[in-house]
Image 1 (spheres, helix red, strand yellow):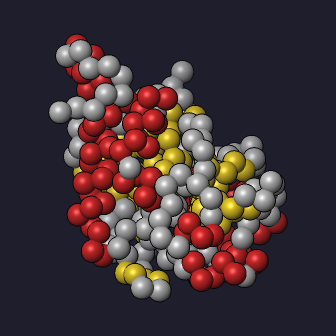
Image 2 (image 1 turned 135 degrees about the vertical axis):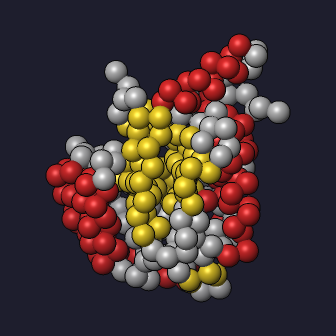
Length: 263
């Protein structure tokens, strides 16, 4: 049976530029911290294993692939603590396709890659857009993954809702100028489709950007449940199934089809 609540941990981190090994060690430490808080899911920012600096990716060592030994430390922490963990990296698929990817590390030690569907700017020169990926099952909760601009495209969340998503989980980089944009994006995705929404944003700065921080969670009625500051850190939030179901039942009585946008 699905659990009555889902505890999600969100890591707002600042990466060591291009150092997959060091960032994997830091991620493994946070797996243990998230487990102590009772989390079943731990979410990191977009490209968390290298940082958001596209100029780095001329260096082959910045890319990860299936069974990359540098991820073993995270894999072992996930196995030990049972927290499904989502880290971000530039990823080479077995067929040679290049993705900005969320790498899902499950407690069985398997790694599954989910690619970014909506690329922008110089990303288009380095990566290919991904097809729609499957939902994650976390303790019976259906979780959809998004990467940054994906969340800015309403059709992305609509697809997830149609597939049965209950949580919309995004790994992102929103800059200091985009703080309001981030809040509107996730409040709208949550409220329009009656899903919880969570986002892990970067902390700190990179070439040409300063993060607005503000990683957080949103209720299916559009309310903020948590808002981080600008510093690095880890927070957890508990998502109650009964509050989600109450809103969905109310919408069903009003005649809304599942996944419909509320006005």
